[in-house]
Image 1: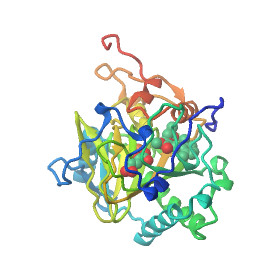
Image 2: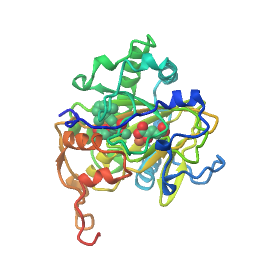
Image 3: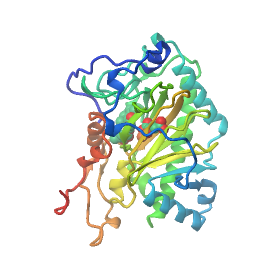
Image 4: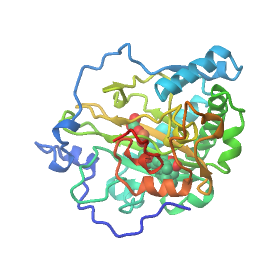
Length: 360
Ligand SMILES: COC(=O)C(/C=C/C1=C(C)CCCC1(C)C)=C/O[C@H]1C=C(C)C(=O)O1
Ligand SMILES: O=C(O)CCC(=O)C(=O)O
Ligand SMILES: [Fe+2]
């Protein structure tokens, strides 16, 4: 089942942040200004001892036991890691970044030929806005369903830049292979058969979202992207080469910045893997912050089971010590739930949680 909004919704006027930046107003419009508690702390960008783990895929592919252990620890303790030697040709990585940048640099009128209708998630605009009083992210998004073909909306695939479509096809094919490979080793790290997710997922759903965050005169007041966990099984995130450090993940009570590593891709566990692993591997809340002088580009691929798949915690990961924490549901239903709610930390996953008797 493809996720579609059912009710007409009123979202009010949504400023395009690149246009706002060009106009250089003295103040940031009220709708972007976060409540005190939600504002990011602007700290100098120093590398810290709290850096997300790095996994070398070329070692994993030789089933190097240490690397599989590192992967297990990364998934259990962080839900995020950076992957090196991911096997995607660096020209492909560079090309997608260039077409994404070229797209965002087009005149607004051209980009608006591919509008994201209110309450939907494909096209150019701001996703996850459902009311007139909702705070807005300092971000322009361009999102497309890629696989299977039935989730594509060909009218939203842009004709400019001319090489956009071909480049996205090539990139998506490579990222799909990477997701399958990573899921194989994630299964191995859980003591499961390598092909278990691939067999379960059917024809996996794959979508891409390009996020562009222009500089913001008051990065202390706004968020680039609201805190959320991804609804996918796995997410592959490419950070633009000269982009500002903007991605932050919530570790305990601390927002930890993800320091870009040249030629690495950021991988994170989505809600779907959290459910399948009965919470052994958790999706982790993350957000993006903005920068006073520098812009940021991220290219994000969501990889998830087919919409018709019924899923719940895998029997192998449920026992007396690890009682079943999530109910069974249809993934299409979860997708619909995900895209018809605002980004709200990990709250979206309450959809699947079995409330324990002791929790309040
Ligand atoms: C922050 O998350 C998203 O923007 C997002 C959206 C994905 C989608 C599209 C851009 C178009 C096709 C449908 C789809 C919902 C996949 C996240 O995707 C996650 C959320 C779910 C659920 C999922 O399967 O991927
Ligand atoms: O720009 C980023 O790094 C965050 C992107 C992200 O989390 C998303 O698109 O889901
Ligand atoms: Fe995300």
